[in-house]
Image 1 (cartoon, one colour):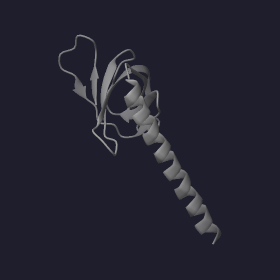
Image 2 (cartoon, one colour; image 1 turned 45 degrees about the vertical axis):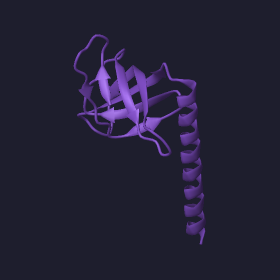
Image 3 (cartoon, rainbow, N blue to C red; image 1 turned 45 degrees about the horizontal axis):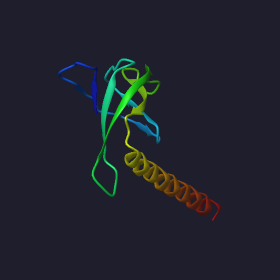
Amino acid sequence: MACVREGEADPRTLTPARLNLSANGIRFSTAHFCRVGNRVDVLLGLPGGAPIRVTVLVSQLRPDDQDDTGYVVSGHFIGLPRRTQERLIQFLLRAQASHLKQTHEERSDAKG
């Protein structure tokens, strides 16, 4: 990931610690400060194809409750092509179904 401002020549690379993804945006934790209004270029490696490159407009920045030296950055995708959004939605639906199946199996095993 890279945090950039319009006209900025050298973007800073961001290494996310945690990631929350939706069809419309992203939230991630990082040790790097990124101002509201900045654009973040993100490369998402999803199964079943080439990585997806998206641009996020940062809409919120707050201190990370779980890491007192970090930040939680939230933003929405801008200029996301419909086909890319559909691929992202399909990935999220498969991930959610897998998670629900695993949770159900764990509960069934616990009941024994």
